[in-house]
Image (cartoon, rainbow, N blue to C red):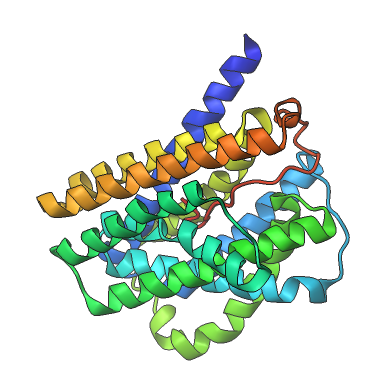
Length: 323
């Protein structure tokens, strides 16, 4: 009974933090125009500090790997967080969220092209409603803009590359997502610290035009971003990838509702049809993949509840965004 209560708490917290981070980041961009890269760097620093605390509490163990092996993945981590946050800043919450759904087909195509990996016809067919639904949403989005579309497209491409690299590094070094994040976060923060003066001049970024409350909200967004990662990790540790996917679908719907209520983002009927089509495609894809995995790995059910410090592959989350 205690385990069920604990798992339920993790699910509720993950949904809550995931929704809060998107809506709070959107508020920071819209209301106080906080610079994107600076916010991402703050998130990385807070995430690293949180991971240090988690390691001290034995939530996970650090695995020693050469830093040079982490540089490319840290660069792609920077790119995906910054670009998805720029997509959030220049698009509606609904369009930002629906664009992220293209990551699934993009990852599949990358694996086919670069790794000659094959997928079943059923899996490929589930991609059709996802792609068509996203196209419909963008076409009928009443707040459509070219810059937002560019950021969303680049965000999908870099996020897909990042997920492919994460999968590769997890297999290569037998690392779980938190062990990878322990290296990615500080390296990514350093990289952003170097490039921020060129894209967000210090004179504009640090004029202290924000109130004390605004700065507290910035720090809070970093803390929430860390807890999104942590609770996602806990969900996989205590439940299964299927549960994680179902929780993701609920967050998707709640974020659309939140964007509509808080930022008054209205949805055209055709746009709503596109969103529904995409959601149906994602649910079908998750169902087919889980069925395929169960067929290939009949013993996987015994591995779903390994202790958190053991290796566990997690459908990657976004983090600062990450969902």
